[in-house]
Length: 302
Image (cartoon, rainbow, N blue to C red; front, side):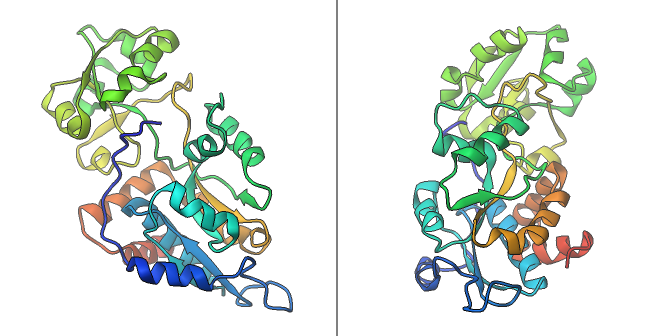
């Protein structure tokens, strides 16, 4: 996945000091009350990364668990994977919204898995022995090749393979390092037989796509501008990109008690739903707590 991935910025919902103090209070087995773990018998610590989309998912997990009778502590806005993973491995954080592809590459940088099912299966075997993942959602936050709706309509595009039918030169926009990524221009040629000219667009990729400076762009699938600017994410039937579905990463001691509750969330978390949640946060300026409460209610999960 691109190291220049542009995450949706959000204000922290808790000060870093508070987050660290909460983590320090968590035991390695947060559901151990001395009489066995059950709903309401202990505290579950839900963590999140330091960007809005991940925080909203974490808040959905937290409210769903509270609705099921669990006591929940939130440790949000932690930062990068290197910062929070030791806390998860130690048991200080027990539930965390993750992304299958990125997480797999964290533990197995040489993985050859690409499809959603293959990545999920490989991830289960790559995790440390005290961690597991629950059901993955269909929602993703991963690399894609995306076009404007007008361009898709003009050339009847629904998948990357359809780009072969475009009669004008293709210019691909994305971060500079995309030029050397296996899913960049070389990968497009070897996997789909598509020739493109590459233009480094960096943080202005979507703007350049809309302006017509490029006609194909490397956009991440949870970017709210996919919805607000009517963009079309092209399907990837040959798995050029490493799938990266939203997945709950949990401590194995906690998993049996919370699986039904969290899996019900994952079953409803579609790609379209995740983008809509991000629009509510970044465009409508709604809080993660309000977004989560409304979404759980709309989906009959509270």
